[in-house]
Structures are given as C-alpha cells and as structure tokens.
Image 1 (tube, rainbow, N blue to C red):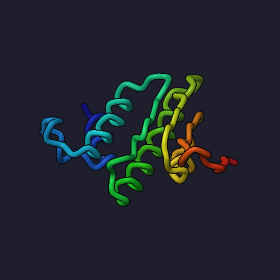
Image 2: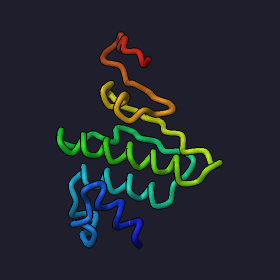
Image 3: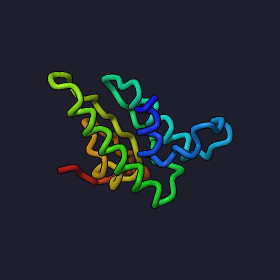
Image 4: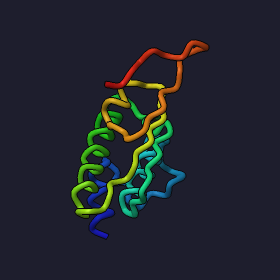
Length: 118
C-alpha cells in the first residue's frame, strides 16, 4: 500500500521491502516494528528499549521519523485520542527526544538515577 511505502521510506527501510525479516539487522527489525504499528495504530505504543541496536545516526533518524509519525497520527483523526506512548529505556536523552506520555527510566545500579523530566 501507499502508506506502507511512505513509512518504510520515512524509516529508511524502503530498499528492504522485499527482504525477509531474518535477513535484517536488529536495528532494521526494530524500525520495521515501528512501521507495523503506524500501519495499524492502536491506542498504546510500548517502546521497550526500542532504540537499542541502532548506531548514532540511525538512532537520531529513527527518533525524528517516529516523532514526525506520532505528530501525523495526532492530526489524522480529529476527536480521536492519539496513542499513549510508554517508553522504557536506560538513556534519558531518548526520553526527551520522543516525549512519551509515560516513561520508565531504568536505574543505573543499586541507587538508580536522579534524572527528572521537567
């Protein structure tokens, strides 16, 4: 479908559209799962270490694509709530980049972390 091609291109996966999933890297599979969500959005998106396995450039590109995609979903259907986004990560910079509705920042050691949002 046109939407599938659009999202695959947005996440840098269009050239892999005929590739079996077992031939993709971990990062490519993670991005493909985000595309899958965007093609049939639900009311909840759980990002559990979703950016792990991505190199720095791909991490930034994926954050930008996901942020843009979530903004598109917000504007697609007036009166319909956008999905709740639960983001679980060890990296506080990822929390700030995606702006989840709910977040779990996994602690660093026995004392956890003193990072605060807002």
